[in-house]
Image (cartoon, rainbow, N blue to C red; front, side, top):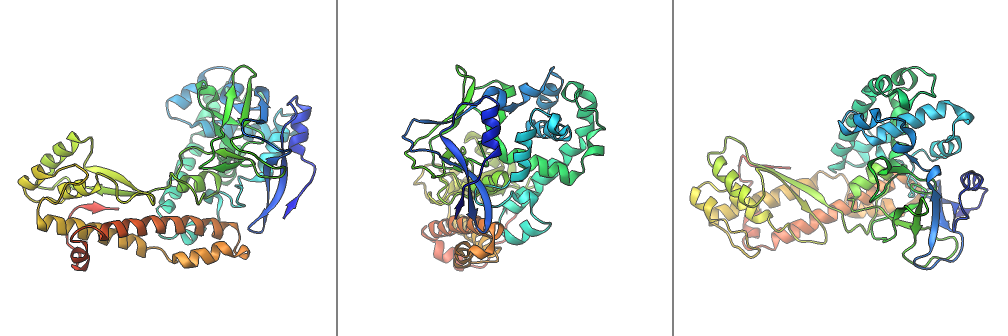
Length: 435
């Protein structure tokens, strides 16, 4: 279902000097939730510039800074660009209609960081909801780490307020932590995060930009070729479409090579055709391994380390260097460490070593599969049921994809010579850590 209604965002753009756009906003219902998205206002052909936003209507760090103090805080790691933009807009919001970004901030508030699939970032889900809906997924740990990072930045806000006076010389308000609680800052940070565009080929101060009519109104796609780009001649951010559109079709833009875990955290979306999707497989050799130094030196020859992360992908079998790496780290004799070959078709170094390698790999992959509370079929049923709502639906999309990646990895491992025997063997005790 779609709804046409007057757009205050489009009205503000026109009143503020933006050129006529070839896109418009349309309200659609996604998983029972109304969401505004950017759609074609007319028939478009590949190469047509559908969106043109003048530089004076774009929020970037170099627009809000009057000296280099805050830039220094960013480059020294005291505060991220996103936190700086969040803090600036939070104070601008307190200025109300006097603020130059009043209409834009009102739209950011209304969207609340909600993605084009109707779900907010899991950073804003109810307490415990991410752990419940995403149980078994490594993204739960990523969400917790991101929240801790936001909390750390919140605790630095007062320092920024005192040191970067140029940023706040128009705001006669108290220090940030007296003005904004952590939940309020988290909400604002997530809204900015879901809306920011990473512009390429621009100065540091323009790298992170809040672009009206951009995300989350603009639908991100992992396979689109169109990108929001800054045009230095016209001083505009533009989007030239990469395909033909009929009026009313959602306009797509490339979101960069991001896995779905990051798309979910940043934008509240999951792209089921994402070619960049992956699951990490981390391996650690304990420092008290008798052959630790020899293994470390041999790995260094290949640009690898004793704490190494490989990426599992549905489109690939197993990562190219995974099996040689496992053969080396599970070696118990110097000759086996020296005998590991890194060529793609290289074979085992010893029968007992290969049994351990395959046993550990298959056992670990199956353990990860067992951590999920739902099956792929149950995920598919949730996705197909519009009554489930946007959060369970987007979570089910991610879990289904992750389970597919693990299933492909198990199948590839089981196809290896000796895998059936290794899988039937009881778990081999080893100090090598896999997660």
